[in-house]
Length: 357
Image (cartoon, rainbow, N blue to C red; front, top):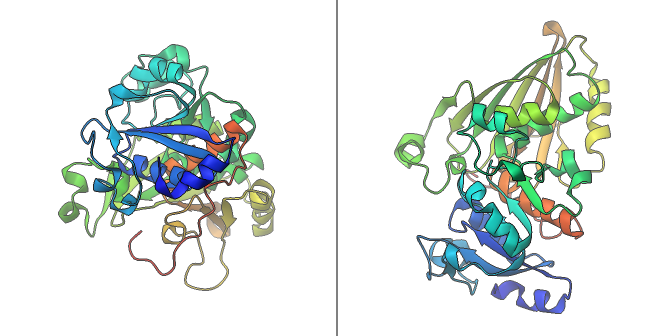
């Protein structure tokens, strides 16, 4: 059990036991960090086949104070909530086993984000557990909060899709995307490639780049189109930062709204959201959404501009891809599913100044 949470968890009779599968990766490490300080969870197990029996701190040096060792994935115990931070394809192979072991399974991979086998045939390599697709609730709480209460299989949204959807959602809810052409450019940090990202993610290759790595056909495009019900043209770039995803969306609507109309739309969508801040113009060095500002947090910044001369709207969204785009979003969804205060364990402020996030 995490030493930093022992007293809180023991004192809270409603604390839910939680395990993290795939805990040696970047998202797994963030789950451990967030759960260790969460008043509603008691961290029970962290699994890693490669690092079994080693301390969590040997892989995640920021967690050296945790009194916890990695267990082999084959030695999973029953828990209230199982968080799966394994690569794509693992969850669909083990979901039956995991659902037997846990009341609630929260999967951070893409295995249950899409609705149909046909989508997985088109965008991935098919699906080996299609019977579970109808049970899964897609987790981007700003979009699907009402569906998450009591959910027992949760598919946490992807980082590029999360940033894009947050930037477009106010326009969709205001009816401004009907008949519009939408072009999305996302720039992401190296942590998106995971702890085993390969040669393209090594420092000599990644440093200093603005590299298109998915000019067309990125898999998150399917997720965005499913969530918003429209077609988007999506391109992703790898850039020289560790954490962060920044989505710039160019919308060419049938009728260009005023800036005051957009302020009204963004306030209507996000006025009561605990993790979303609208940043559109203003003053200072950070006049529009910036990943550095939200590094290490579950926060998202969104913003917009109107280009009347070209009949164009530009929206922006910035997140920490490892937190809001992965582990933090999963914890947020679990909070809602279990009836915890939805901000529990996720109220960290960002850091300023900070280097490459």
